[in-house]
Image (cartoon, rainbow, N blue to C red; front, top):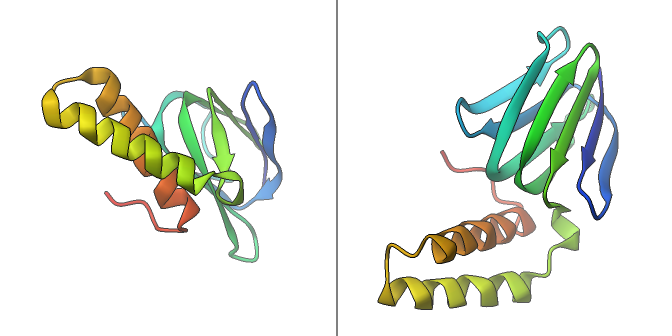
Length: 134
């Protein structure tokens, strides 16, 4: 079992135990951490983090960049933003998605709008309880 913390500057989204933590790093893609994992530090992508508990329940968080650190029996997710599904404002995320799509329809290369779209889609996916698509 791991002691897990999912933290952002605004809040502590999760503190508890887990059998496994699944995250996506910018360099290595998806990675799963289980008991006995070697020490690890990685940069997180804008993606979901799954905390899988002993009984098989899973808590999913929308994570907007940050870092993951594994040390001994501890996994810490430090992110710019971390949101659990039931805290996501779906209407706000849908409006952000529509704004980003409108900007991208005029300029498909707009990096800010691409980032906004990615964050909005992540929030909507996590809020809907949809699994990560690879």
